[in-house]
Figure 1 (cartoon, rainbow, N blue to C red):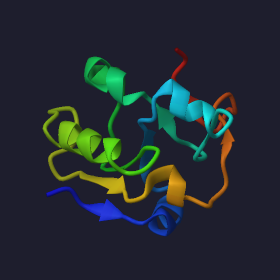
Figure 2 (figure 1 turned 90 degrees about the vertical axis):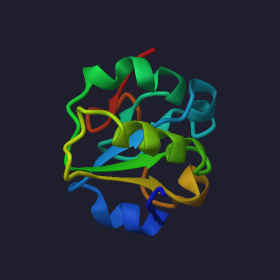
Figure 3 (figure 1 turned 45 degrees about the vertical axis):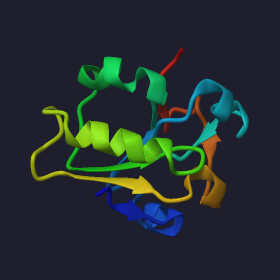
Figure 4 (figure 1 turned 120 degrees about the vertical axis):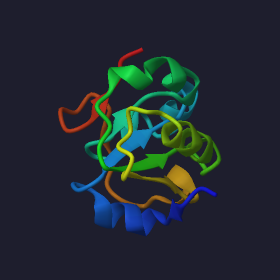
Length: 116
């Protein structure tokens, strides 16, 4: 079973947890290319191929548009040997549709968006 947190809980964890945004490019455009501050953007369709390209931290919060793709991404990350064994990987329930916090441009230096 995948652990889920609320969008409010995500805000409380910002700065402490690694945030992974798995929205596809067309979904990213729906928020005008804006992401959660400090997040890393890797579209779900590219995540399996890019798993080795990232240093995964002890706590990873995965967010998508509405909360479904993030559950799939959590399952994938939990099975990946590059994530610490004692790490926590959670999905943000409701995704960006429920997130009311600050967003920054994916181009902003505080967001580590992956260029397509």
